[in-house]
Length: 151
Image 1 (spheres, rainbow, N blue to C red):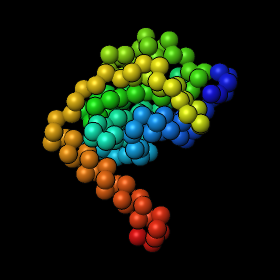
Image 2: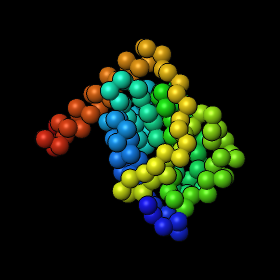
Image 3: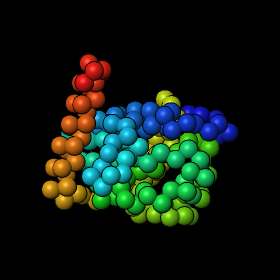
């Protein structure tokens, strides 16, 4: 993990959180657009079709300025904040992060650890289906672009 004085960038946190989620059986996409127009920093789906969203926070200022994270809750079964090792987690716990609604991941560019498991709130079947279709199409489109950048 990173030294507590280092402030990781969002890409490093997303990479580490993505590796952690992969270890837990989730296939992930970064910058995944939801049906409400919001874009999740990291979204994943496991073999049961559960949807996880991870909101990356690089600094306390980034967290304090964020008013949109509750908009993600209706689009996932599990919601996590991912922060670096030096993030002042006490402030996150005391503020609007609502530990009853969100889990907590500490990550760096190489991996991460779940410090607090997310509360599971199952999605409605119609919302789940729409998300799974959007996720599959987004993943396929990104693969197509890698194979042929002119698409």
